[in-house]
Length: 88
Image 1 (cartoon, helix red, strand yellow):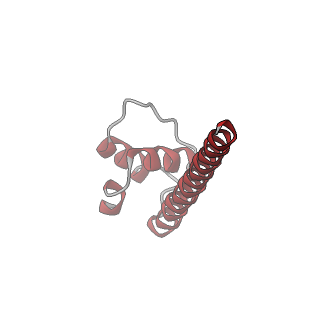
Image 2 (image 1 turned 30 degrees about the vertical axis):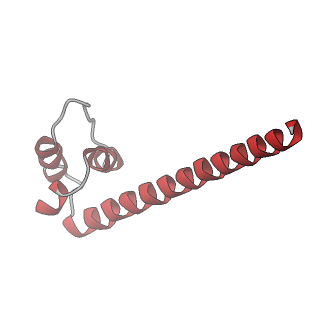
């Protein structure tokens, strides 16, 4: 159970929603943990697998978004450099 408090609030919210729970944005991490643990669908080993999957998916998504931002910056920089060269 303590492993849940080591996760980000957004991950706990997603986990609670995966378990079919109704979540209010105002809930604190300890209250989210209590809500999840008291759920009739709570099975610790299953929840560990689900939360790990949620975290990995978020990391993958963030990495993809960062890669796209980096590629966009590189493209814009090349465009500015090319434009500058054409002006000279």
